[in-house]
Each structure stands twice: as structure tokens, then as C-alpha cells.
Image (cartoon, rainbow, N blue to C red; front, side, top):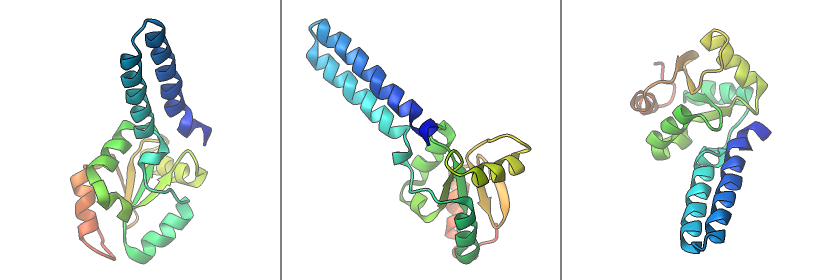
Length: 149
């Protein structure tokens, strides 16, 4: 779990240091803007930008019941963030598994990618797709319950 928060915390600390330097230089307005930008980046790259993660076993159980895809992701991954952002509200309809919090999820990804932890890996009807196009993922949601790629 600590890995997931490393980048956001570095952004907060870095932003605070840069802002402190701007304040010391006599530019409190610039310091405030810089601090806000760094805080927004920290939130964007934190686990807070994603729907609540569940474990791989629970995601597989739920997916089998409702036919919705499973997204294996990790915090700080720009491709995961791109998928999450482009899905918008539809992202909440997927089952999200953070591979840094769930070793079983990381194992699923390694099995699908030949040993790497390449994310996002989306599993639809038991078949993995590595870094799929967000429009394709949205289309899989449109197929409804029990969808079979």
C-alpha cells in the first residue's frame, strides 16, 4: 500500500518545498498557485482517482455473476489513469483490482502478460486484454450482463 502513495506524497513534499522557496523569494501568490498545482497532481496520481478496489478473487466472483470486466491497475500508472479518465462515470461499473494491494491480482496480470505486471489489464469473460482502448472497454460494458467479448 505504501507504494501506491509514494508518488503522491513526493508531489506534495516537492510542491511544499517549491512553494516555500517562492515564499522566501517574496512571491506568496506564485507559491499558492504552485502548491495547488502540485496538490492536484498528487490527487490525480493517487488511488483516490480510482473507484474502490477489491481483491482479485472477489472481482472474479462478481464478474462471473454480472458479466462486467475486471480492470487490474496500479497507482501512478499513466495508462491506468488514461483508461479511468476516458471511461468517466462508466468506470464505476467495472471491477477494479489494485495489483499493489492484492498479490493474487498481480499474479493474474503476470500470467496474462508473460511475467510482467503490465497494466491496465482488462479481463472480459475470462480473457485478458493488455492496455485496451478505453472505447473498446466502454463497448464491453454496453453489451450488458453476461457479455462474452
